[in-house]
View 1 (tube, rainbow, N blue to C red):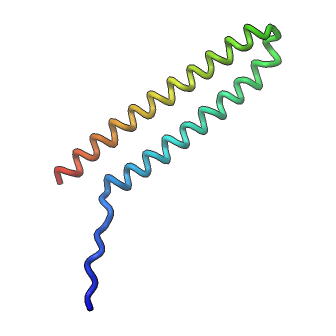
View 2 (cartoon, rainbow, N blue to C red):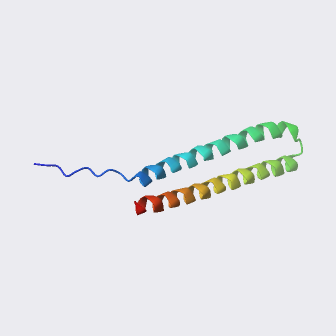
View 3 (cartoon, rainbow, N blue to C red):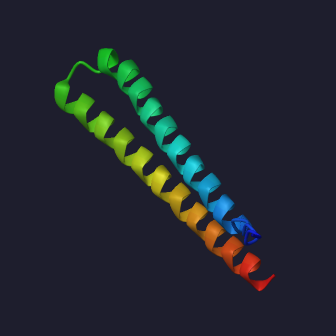
Length: 87
C-alpha cells in the first residue's frame, strides 16, 4: 500500500509561529523592564502617590510599546501571507 505524500506546512505558517514567539519574548522583556524600573524608582520616590504615578506611567509605556510591536508584526504576517499566497 502506498502512502499519500506528506503535505509540508506552508512557509507562512512557520513565519506566523516565529512571530508569535517574538511577541511573547517582547512581552516578557517589557515585564522585566517594568520590574527593573519599579525596583529603581521605589526607593528614590518616597511619596506614595508620586511613586504610583511614575509606575503607572511606566506600565502604560510598556503596554503601548507592546501594542505597537504586535501591530507591526501583524502587518508583517499579513503581508507575508499575501506574498506567499501569490506564489
